[in-house]
Amino acid sequence: MKVDIVAPGDLGESERRQWAAFQDADDRMRSPFQSVEFTLAAARHRPRTRVAVISDGGEVVGFLPFERGPLGEATSPAAVLNEGQGVIHRQGYEWDARELLDRAGIGVWEFDQVVGSPTAFEPYTTFRAESPAMDLTDGFETYLAGARARSSRIKDLSRRRRRLGREHGPVRFEFAADDPVAMRRVMAWKSDQYRRTARPDRFAEPWIRALVEDVATLRTPGCSGVVSLVWAGDTLVAGHVGLRSQRVLPTWFPAYDPDFSRYSPGLLLHVEMAEAGAADGLECIDLGRGPKDYKDWLADHVHEVWEGRVVTRTGAGLLHWARRVPLREVRNTVVSNRRLYDVADRTLRTYASVKAAALKSSALKSSALKSSARPEESVR
Image (cartoon, rainbow, N blue to C red; front, side, top):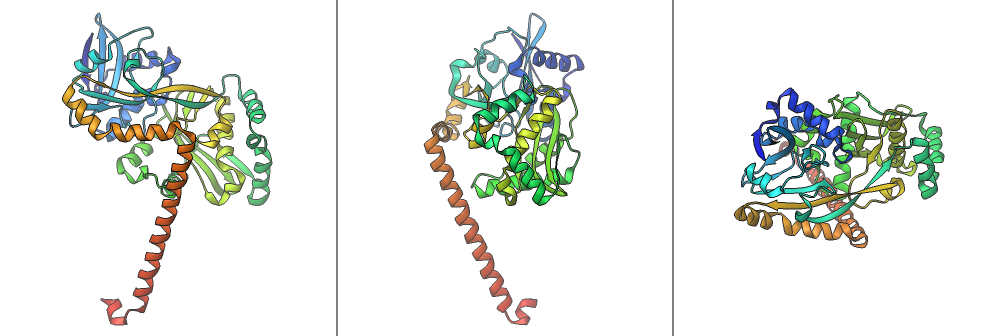
């Protein structure tokens, strides 16, 4: 095994074609997050992004995109956003994970979205999770018939759609809209959702916002930005900012206007995406790991994703364990137990509501004090 470390932008055209060919040959590597185009986009906003080019017998057999940390540790590029991690490799090629990382100069490699079954990472996997998906390989009508049979919520969706149209104007859907203003509205809804549920607001990070806006403009076979929108008349009701390859669309940032929640806009958005996507060659909408009721209603297929870490240098491994692993283990315990997850979710939502009420009360008091100040004080 020979490993060369290069900046993504230094990959030659033949190497990029080889990368795409490896993806095309293996269904496990068909995610847009595993594409060379996503790695190139990540590198524009995360300068420590690199690619390990793996050769064997003088032939390129694989690529490991990664983002190097300050202490010799590494993750996938833009790891907090990346839902398709691992080595993009020639079908049937096998390697030793520790040897690969050692030759790449990586002390610890952390992963949490490796699609299950690559034998090189199995000994280092500490947690396995199911990632639900909508299977469109037999066409949308076949999918929809099964979804209606499984879930009364999906069966009732047509009625809710008609009601939305009667009360707010004709319902229309755009699968791949070129509408930056609407996209930013969806992102704002997502930020509000993060705050309502006491989750960190990803879009508060400038590099995340910049990267999402960047990849939304991509138009390549391996990775294209897709902004999907549901309208009622001239009112935007729901949307999704995401990526697709030719066959797979992972859900990334779906959001909707809470004022329209009685119409099930999130479910409507996903079903509309499935219909339009199937007509455009999609075979799968990956809903992502983690428990959510809407995933139970929509999904008819699951695949396994792995989480873990490979350590090649003891010092870096200890530092990484101290900084990351205990908290991650607590999170995984909660996520894998539906009862614990529901309790934690309710607790976070209550905390967010109390915090929002306190901030509102403080703002009102501040406003009252300002309005009661003497005129000369107000001027100063």
